[in-house]
Length: 283
Figure (cartoon, rainbow, N blue to C red):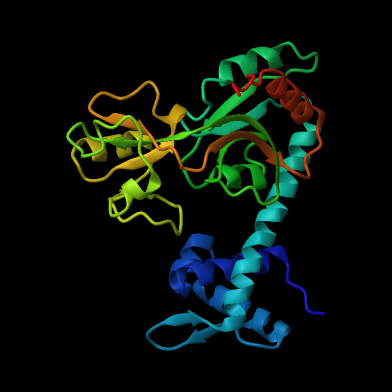
């Protein structure tokens, strides 16, 4: 069975991303002829072409499309393995927690205080990320644990424990038709412009692209869209907007997540502290 070395896979991914041998060579800091030769060598070993080349453009063959998708996962897995091995060997390394700004439902201080009481507690480094990549931080080893929201974040390959469940609210400007309501239903939101979250594929949003809650609120204030969020992400309520509970919106869950293959004691201790700090839900 044909096999590729990690370096060769990196060469292929660079060309597949750029679809231009010159730009890929610059990205890799190698000469373009050497890169072209390496790609031809890979194709010869595999026995089929990965690229369609013409004088004007480079495109991927179906085989190249498949290798790009799975090859990227393979490279990420190798990087994560090296990163985690290095971390496991460093007895002084701190624990890294990733979350979105304000995305802790008010629980973080209690969790950190509880963790500090663990006999093997370490320094906790807090990493903030955008709406699309918190799960990537956990899968590739840049973070050890994360505070995520379901059903919004993809938990595939991640173990998790639910810390808090809450309802969602619709955020509207003061003059909006829903602003004076005590509650709303999902049907009331039909036809409204909703946000497109930067870096998050899919979704039903038709409004401007936003990267975080601050940008969302700014767009709502000027009447460009409305938003539907877990209540804790908008509290304390920003000035210039109104929040209305949506009675039939599926609830959101704040979860503590970690790579399901990660069984290190420092992660287990943090999980223990987080569960101990978990608030008692009101029936």
